[in-house]
Image 1 (cartoon, one colour):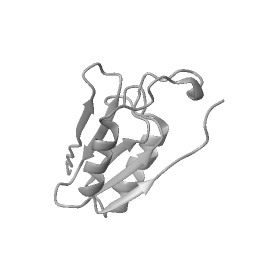
Image 2: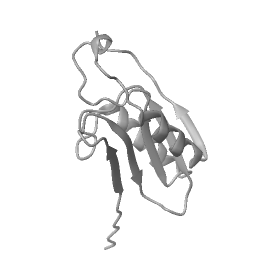
Image 3: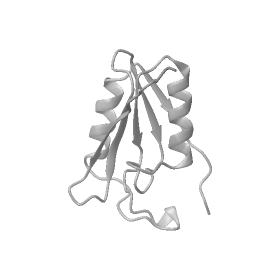
Image 4: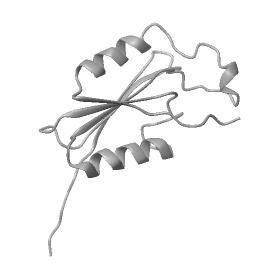
Length: 119
């Protein structure tokens, strides 16, 4: 019998009012390079529960054996999204671009991922 253990370290950076999530970082192998994935909007929680997009991104990168971490950032950092994304107030703030540029500079690869908006 063989027991295999694995740890995924999760780190997230939020605004003080928790209105914006700037970064969701998942690390599973610190010896390998990181990949930044930029999407449009963050999932409402994103720490313990993950949306389908995040799961698909994570699975693809973890199974590729090229990367040891993923930095998930968004063009729009507001996590308190309304039903209609066209009417969201303050979709980003002054810290959004700062965090975006920081993780891009720390990554070997940057992927821009987008999909269809819900109506």
